[in-house]
Image (cartoon, rainbow, N blue to C red; front, side, top):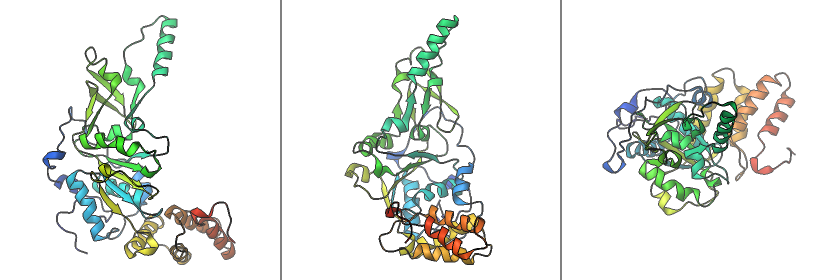
Length: 343
Protein backbone atom coordinates (compact mmCIF):
# COMPACT_ATOMS: atom_id res chain seq x y z
CA UNK A 1 0.00 0.00 0.00
CA UNK A 2 1.32 3.43 -0.95
CA UNK A 3 1.20 5.86 1.94
CA UNK A 4 -0.40 9.20 0.99
CA UNK A 5 1.96 12.16 1.27
CA UNK A 6 -0.24 13.93 3.79
CA UNK A 7 -0.03 11.10 6.36
CA UNK A 8 2.00 12.03 9.43
CA UNK A 9 1.37 8.70 11.16
CA UNK A 10 2.08 5.83 8.75
CA UNK A 11 1.36 2.94 11.12
CA UNK A 12 4.49 0.98 10.22
CA UNK A 13 6.26 1.19 13.58
CA UNK A 14 9.33 2.82 12.04
CA UNK A 15 10.24 5.99 14.03
CA UNK A 16 10.52 9.20 12.01
CA UNK A 17 10.25 12.97 12.46
CA UNK A 18 6.97 13.36 10.58
CA UNK A 19 5.36 15.29 13.45
CA UNK A 20 7.44 18.27 12.29
CA UNK A 21 5.54 18.25 8.99
CA UNK A 22 2.19 18.72 10.70
CA UNK A 23 0.72 22.02 9.45
CA UNK A 24 -0.56 24.75 11.72
CA UNK A 25 -3.82 23.87 13.46
CA UNK A 26 -7.21 25.18 12.35
CA UNK A 27 -7.86 28.64 13.84
CA UNK A 28 -10.46 27.22 16.20
CA UNK A 29 -7.95 24.67 17.56
CA UNK A 30 -4.96 27.00 17.89
CA UNK A 31 -3.65 27.32 21.46
CA UNK A 32 -1.15 29.80 22.87
CA UNK A 33 -0.09 28.49 26.25
CA UNK A 34 2.82 30.24 27.96
CA UNK A 35 5.51 29.79 29.11
CA UNK A 36 6.73 27.25 26.61
CA UNK A 37 8.03 24.11 28.32
CA UNK A 38 10.83 21.95 26.97
CA UNK A 39 9.71 19.45 24.33
CA UNK A 40 8.45 16.09 25.54
CA UNK A 41 11.22 13.67 26.57
CA UNK A 42 12.54 11.05 24.18
CA UNK A 43 10.73 7.75 23.74
CA UNK A 44 10.30 5.99 27.06
CA UNK A 45 10.65 2.28 27.66
CA UNK A 46 6.92 1.73 28.16
CA UNK A 47 5.92 2.12 24.51
CA UNK A 48 8.88 0.00 23.44
CA UNK A 49 7.79 -2.70 25.89
CA UNK A 50 4.19 -2.57 24.71
CA UNK A 51 5.13 -2.74 21.03
CA UNK A 52 8.04 -5.16 21.35
CA UNK A 53 11.75 -4.58 20.94
CA UNK A 54 11.76 -5.34 17.21
CA UNK A 55 10.41 -3.24 14.36
CA UNK A 56 6.90 -3.92 13.16
CA UNK A 57 6.79 -4.70 9.46
CA UNK A 58 4.26 -3.04 7.19
CA UNK A 59 1.18 -0.96 7.93
CA UNK A 60 -0.83 -2.43 10.80
CA UNK A 61 -3.98 -0.40 10.24
CA UNK A 62 -6.41 -0.31 7.34
CA UNK A 63 -6.18 2.69 4.99
CA UNK A 64 -9.45 4.15 6.29
CA UNK A 65 -8.22 3.75 9.88
CA UNK A 66 -4.99 5.58 9.05
CA UNK A 67 -7.02 8.35 7.43
CA UNK A 68 -9.02 8.87 10.65
CA UNK A 69 -5.91 8.77 12.83
CA UNK A 70 -4.16 11.35 10.69
CA UNK A 71 -7.30 13.47 10.47
CA UNK A 72 -7.32 13.62 14.29
CA UNK A 73 -3.67 14.74 14.27
CA UNK A 74 -4.35 17.47 11.70
CA UNK A 75 -7.55 18.70 13.38
CA UNK A 76 -6.16 18.44 16.95
CA UNK A 77 -9.18 16.38 17.96
CA UNK A 78 -9.38 13.39 20.34
CA UNK A 79 -9.81 9.89 18.94
CA UNK A 80 -12.55 7.73 20.46
CA UNK A 81 -11.41 4.18 19.74
CA UNK A 82 -13.88 1.33 20.22
CA UNK A 83 -13.55 -2.42 19.74
CA UNK A 84 -13.25 -5.77 21.47
CA UNK A 85 -10.36 -6.60 23.84
CA UNK A 86 -7.31 -7.40 21.74
CA UNK A 87 -8.34 -5.19 18.82
CA UNK A 88 -5.37 -2.85 19.40
CA UNK A 89 -7.08 0.15 21.04
CA UNK A 90 -4.46 0.87 23.69
CA UNK A 91 -1.66 -0.24 21.37
CA UNK A 92 -2.57 2.60 19.02
CA UNK A 93 -1.57 5.26 21.56
CA UNK A 94 1.81 3.60 22.10
CA UNK A 95 2.29 3.15 18.33
CA UNK A 96 1.74 6.88 17.74
CA UNK A 97 4.15 7.85 20.53
CA UNK A 98 6.76 5.38 19.29
CA UNK A 99 6.59 6.24 15.60
CA UNK A 100 6.44 10.04 16.05
CA UNK A 101 8.91 10.23 18.95
CA UNK A 102 6.47 11.90 21.35
CA UNK A 103 7.77 10.46 24.60
CA UNK A 104 6.15 8.28 27.23
CA UNK A 105 2.41 7.78 26.89
CA UNK A 106 0.50 9.50 29.71
CA UNK A 107 -1.86 6.76 30.88
CA UNK A 108 -5.15 7.59 32.61
CA UNK A 109 -7.01 4.38 33.52
CA UNK A 110 -10.69 5.12 34.18
CA UNK A 111 -12.86 3.33 36.76
CA UNK A 112 -16.37 3.97 38.05
CA UNK A 113 -15.09 6.36 40.75
CA UNK A 114 -12.85 8.43 38.45
CA UNK A 115 -13.53 12.17 38.33
CA UNK A 116 -12.18 14.92 36.09
CA UNK A 117 -10.13 16.24 39.02
CA UNK A 118 -8.26 12.89 39.16
CA UNK A 119 -7.02 13.46 35.62
CA UNK A 120 -6.14 17.13 36.10
CA UNK A 121 -4.33 17.34 39.45
CA UNK A 122 -4.30 16.34 43.11
CA UNK A 123 -3.56 18.51 46.14
CA UNK A 124 -2.38 16.86 49.35
CA UNK A 125 -3.66 19.38 51.89
CA UNK A 126 -3.30 16.93 54.78
CA UNK A 127 0.40 16.37 54.12
CA UNK A 128 0.93 20.12 53.91
CA UNK A 129 -0.84 20.66 57.23
CA UNK A 130 1.19 17.91 58.90
CA UNK A 131 4.45 19.40 57.60
CA UNK A 132 3.40 22.85 58.86
CA UNK A 133 2.65 21.45 62.33
CA UNK A 134 5.96 19.61 62.41
CA UNK A 135 7.79 22.80 61.39
CA UNK A 136 6.18 24.71 64.28
CA UNK A 137 7.13 21.98 66.77
CA UNK A 138 10.73 22.06 65.58
CA UNK A 139 10.83 25.86 65.58
CA UNK A 140 11.64 26.28 61.90
CA UNK A 141 9.98 28.15 59.05
CA UNK A 142 7.25 26.30 57.23
CA UNK A 143 8.09 27.75 53.85
CA UNK A 144 5.67 28.52 51.03
CA UNK A 145 6.43 25.75 48.54
CA UNK A 146 2.87 24.66 47.88
CA UNK A 147 4.11 23.07 44.67
CA UNK A 148 5.47 20.15 46.70
CA UNK A 149 1.89 19.15 47.49
CA UNK A 150 0.42 19.58 44.00
CA UNK A 151 0.78 16.87 41.37
CA UNK A 152 -0.62 17.09 37.87
CA UNK A 153 -2.52 14.05 36.63
CA UNK A 154 -2.15 12.52 33.16
CA UNK A 155 -4.60 14.97 31.56
CA UNK A 156 -3.12 17.94 33.43
CA UNK A 157 0.39 16.99 32.32
CA UNK A 158 -0.75 16.53 28.70
CA UNK A 159 -2.17 20.07 28.71
CA UNK A 160 1.13 21.70 29.69
CA UNK A 161 2.44 24.03 26.94
CA UNK A 162 4.87 21.64 25.25
CA UNK A 163 6.30 22.52 21.84
CA UNK A 164 5.48 18.98 20.68
CA UNK A 165 2.28 17.21 21.70
CA UNK A 166 2.21 14.52 24.35
CA UNK A 167 0.18 11.35 23.87
CA UNK A 168 -2.62 10.81 26.40
CA UNK A 169 -4.36 7.43 26.71
CA UNK A 170 -7.73 7.69 28.46
CA UNK A 171 -8.30 3.98 28.95
CA UNK A 172 -11.79 2.45 29.15
CA UNK A 173 -13.80 5.66 29.32
CA UNK A 174 -16.98 3.58 29.25
CA UNK A 175 -16.17 2.41 32.81
CA UNK A 176 -16.72 5.94 34.16
CA UNK A 177 -19.82 7.25 35.87
CA UNK A 178 -22.37 9.22 33.89
CA UNK A 179 -20.78 12.64 34.52
CA UNK A 180 -17.14 12.20 33.45
CA UNK A 181 -17.63 12.31 29.64
CA UNK A 182 -19.51 15.60 29.95
CA UNK A 183 -16.99 16.94 32.47
CA UNK A 184 -14.18 16.31 29.97
CA UNK A 185 -15.74 18.58 27.37
CA UNK A 186 -14.45 21.92 28.60
CA UNK A 187 -10.84 20.79 29.14
CA UNK A 188 -10.69 19.11 25.73
CA UNK A 189 -12.38 22.02 23.94
CA UNK A 190 -10.54 24.88 25.63
CA UNK A 191 -7.18 23.15 26.08
CA UNK A 192 -6.79 24.64 29.56
CA UNK A 193 -7.80 24.40 33.20
CA UNK A 194 -7.21 26.25 36.46
CA UNK A 195 -5.76 25.15 39.79
CA UNK A 196 -7.88 26.85 42.45
CA UNK A 197 -5.24 26.47 45.18
CA UNK A 198 -2.73 28.45 43.08
CA UNK A 199 -5.22 31.08 41.93
CA UNK A 200 -5.81 32.03 45.58
CA UNK A 201 -2.13 32.85 46.12
CA UNK A 202 -1.37 34.20 42.63
CA UNK A 203 -0.76 37.79 43.80
CA UNK A 204 1.95 36.97 46.27
CA UNK A 205 3.29 33.88 44.45
CA UNK A 206 2.55 34.21 40.72
CA UNK A 207 4.66 31.25 39.57
CA UNK A 208 4.76 27.85 41.27
CA UNK A 209 6.58 24.73 40.14
CA UNK A 210 4.39 21.63 40.51
CA UNK A 211 5.04 17.92 40.08
CA UNK A 212 3.99 16.27 36.83
CA UNK A 213 2.57 12.83 36.15
CA UNK A 214 5.87 11.58 34.75
CA UNK A 215 8.00 12.69 37.68
CA UNK A 216 9.18 16.08 36.45
CA UNK A 217 8.37 19.63 37.51
CA UNK A 218 6.64 22.35 35.53
CA UNK A 219 6.00 26.06 36.16
CA UNK A 220 2.40 27.23 36.54
CA UNK A 221 1.69 30.96 36.30
CA UNK A 222 -1.38 32.46 37.90
CA UNK A 223 -2.87 29.05 38.59
CA UNK A 224 -3.66 28.55 34.88
CA UNK A 225 -2.42 25.80 32.58
CA UNK A 226 -3.03 26.16 28.84
CA UNK A 227 -1.57 23.93 26.16
CA UNK A 228 0.57 25.05 23.24
CA UNK A 229 0.45 21.85 21.14
CA UNK A 230 -2.85 20.08 21.73
CA UNK A 231 -2.10 16.54 22.96
CA UNK A 232 -2.78 13.41 20.95
CA UNK A 233 -5.73 12.06 22.94
CA UNK A 234 -6.74 8.42 22.48
CA UNK A 235 -9.88 7.48 24.44
CA UNK A 236 -10.74 3.78 24.42
CA UNK A 237 -14.07 2.09 24.99
CA UNK A 238 -15.20 -1.54 25.00
CA UNK A 239 -18.68 -0.43 23.99
CA UNK A 240 -20.32 -0.95 27.38
CA UNK A 241 -22.20 2.36 27.20
CA UNK A 242 -23.20 5.17 24.88
CA UNK A 243 -21.61 8.60 25.11
CA UNK A 244 -23.37 11.98 25.01
CA UNK A 245 -23.65 13.71 21.65
CA UNK A 246 -21.58 16.78 22.73
CA UNK A 247 -18.59 14.52 23.38
CA UNK A 248 -19.05 12.53 20.18
CA UNK A 249 -19.10 15.63 17.98
CA UNK A 250 -15.79 16.79 19.47
CA UNK A 251 -14.08 13.47 18.71
CA UNK A 252 -13.28 11.35 15.71
CA UNK A 253 -14.67 7.84 16.15
CA UNK A 254 -12.47 4.91 15.14
CA UNK A 255 -13.92 1.39 15.47
CA UNK A 256 -11.35 -1.41 15.34
CA UNK A 257 -12.70 -4.81 14.30
CA UNK A 258 -11.85 -7.96 16.22
CA UNK A 259 -8.66 -9.59 14.84
CA UNK A 260 -10.55 -12.78 13.99
CA UNK A 261 -13.10 -10.87 11.90
CA UNK A 262 -10.78 -8.74 9.78
CA UNK A 263 -7.65 -9.41 7.73
CA UNK A 264 -6.03 -6.17 8.89
CA UNK A 265 -6.78 -7.04 12.51
CA UNK A 266 -5.20 -10.46 11.97
CA UNK A 267 -2.13 -8.86 10.38
CA UNK A 268 -1.89 -6.48 13.34
CA UNK A 269 -2.00 -9.44 15.74
CA UNK A 270 0.65 -11.37 13.75
CA UNK A 271 2.92 -8.31 13.68
CA UNK A 272 2.49 -7.78 17.42
CA UNK A 273 3.54 -11.38 18.11
CA UNK A 274 6.50 -11.08 15.74
CA UNK A 275 7.60 -7.83 17.37
CA UNK A 276 7.76 -9.51 20.77
CA UNK A 277 9.11 -12.93 19.80
CA UNK A 278 11.01 -12.38 16.54
CA UNK A 279 11.28 -14.68 13.54
CA UNK A 280 12.40 -17.82 15.38
CA UNK A 281 10.85 -21.21 14.65
CA UNK A 282 7.23 -20.67 15.54
CA UNK A 283 5.26 -23.83 14.65
CA UNK A 284 3.60 -23.96 18.05
CA UNK A 285 3.27 -20.19 18.06
CA UNK A 286 1.40 -20.25 14.75
CA UNK A 287 -0.92 -22.93 16.11
CA UNK A 288 -1.69 -20.76 19.15
CA UNK A 289 -2.48 -17.79 16.90
CA UNK A 290 -4.86 -19.96 14.86
CA UNK A 291 -6.54 -21.18 18.08
CA UNK A 292 -6.88 -17.60 19.28
CA UNK A 293 -8.49 -16.51 16.02
CA UNK A 294 -10.84 -19.52 15.94
CA UNK A 295 -12.54 -18.65 19.24
CA UNK A 296 -16.31 -19.04 19.18
CA UNK A 297 -18.43 -16.07 18.02
CA UNK A 298 -19.07 -13.64 20.84
CA UNK A 299 -16.24 -14.97 23.02
CA UNK A 300 -13.98 -12.26 24.44
CA UNK A 301 -10.24 -12.75 24.32
CA UNK A 302 -7.44 -10.21 24.68
CA UNK A 303 -4.12 -10.13 22.83
CA UNK A 304 -2.30 -10.19 26.18
CA UNK A 305 -3.67 -13.70 26.71
CA UNK A 306 -2.10 -14.87 23.45
CA UNK A 307 1.27 -13.31 24.30
CA UNK A 308 1.20 -14.90 27.76
CA UNK A 309 0.34 -18.30 26.27
CA UNK A 310 3.14 -18.13 23.69
CA UNK A 311 5.73 -17.12 26.27
CA UNK A 312 4.76 -19.71 28.88
CA UNK A 313 4.49 -22.62 26.48
CA UNK A 314 7.93 -21.77 25.09
CA UNK A 315 9.60 -21.38 28.48
CA UNK A 316 7.80 -23.71 30.88
CA UNK A 317 6.64 -26.69 28.82
CA UNK A 318 9.09 -27.08 25.97
CA UNK A 319 9.27 -30.90 26.05
CA UNK A 320 5.64 -31.85 26.56
CA UNK A 321 3.06 -31.13 23.90
CA UNK A 322 0.10 -32.10 26.16
CA UNK A 323 1.34 -29.68 28.84
CA UNK A 324 1.78 -26.91 26.29
CA UNK A 325 -1.76 -27.39 24.99
CA UNK A 326 -3.22 -27.53 28.50
CA UNK A 327 -1.42 -24.34 29.55
CA UNK A 328 -2.47 -22.56 26.37
CA UNK A 329 -6.14 -23.50 26.90
CA UNK A 330 -5.94 -22.29 30.49
CA UNK A 331 -4.39 -18.93 29.60
CA UNK A 332 -6.60 -18.26 26.57
CA UNK A 333 -9.97 -18.93 28.19
CA UNK A 334 -12.58 -16.42 27.01
CA UNK A 335 -12.74 -13.49 29.39
CA UNK A 336 -16.51 -13.90 29.73
CA UNK A 337 -16.15 -17.54 30.83
CA UNK A 338 -15.65 -16.57 34.47
CA UNK A 339 -13.80 -18.97 36.76
CA UNK A 340 -14.75 -22.07 34.86
CA UNK A 341 -11.72 -23.98 33.68
CA UNK A 342 -11.37 -25.58 30.28
CA UNK A 343 -13.69 -28.55 29.76
